[in-house]
Length: 147
Image 1 (cartoon, rainbow, N blue to C red):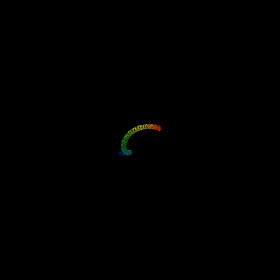
Image 2 (image 1 turned 90 degrees about the vertical axis):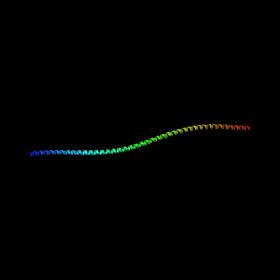
Image 3 (image 1 turned 180 degrees about the vertical axis):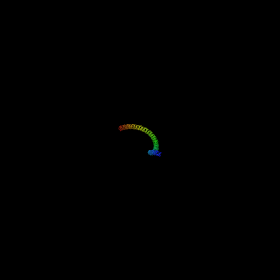
Image 4 (image 1 turned 60 degrees about the vertical axis):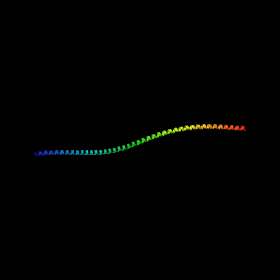
C-alpha cells in the first residue's frame, strides 16, 4: 500500500512539476505581454504629450492669426477711409478743373474778341492813316493853289 501511495504521490508530484513548468512558461509569456503592454502605454503617453504640445502650439498660432487678422481688418478700415478721402479729393479736383477749364474757355473767348477788336482797330488805323494822307495831299494841293 505504501508503494502505491508513494507511486501516486510521485505521480502527483510529476503532474505538479509539469503543471508548475507550464505555469512558469505561461508566466514568462505573460511577462512578455505585460512588457509589451507597458511599452504601448508609454508610447500612448508620449503620443498624448506630443498631441498636447501640438494642440498648445496650434492654439498659440490660432491666437496669433486672430491678432494678425484684427490688424489686417484695421488696416483695411484705414485703407477704405483713405480711399474714400482720396475719391473725395479726386472729385473736388475734378470739379475745380472743370471750373478752371470754363474760366480758360472764357479767357480764350475774350482773347478772340480782343484779337478781333485789335484787327478792327488796325483796320481803322490804316483807314485813318489813309484819310490823313489824303488830307495832307489835299492841304498840300490847297497851299499850292493858294500860292
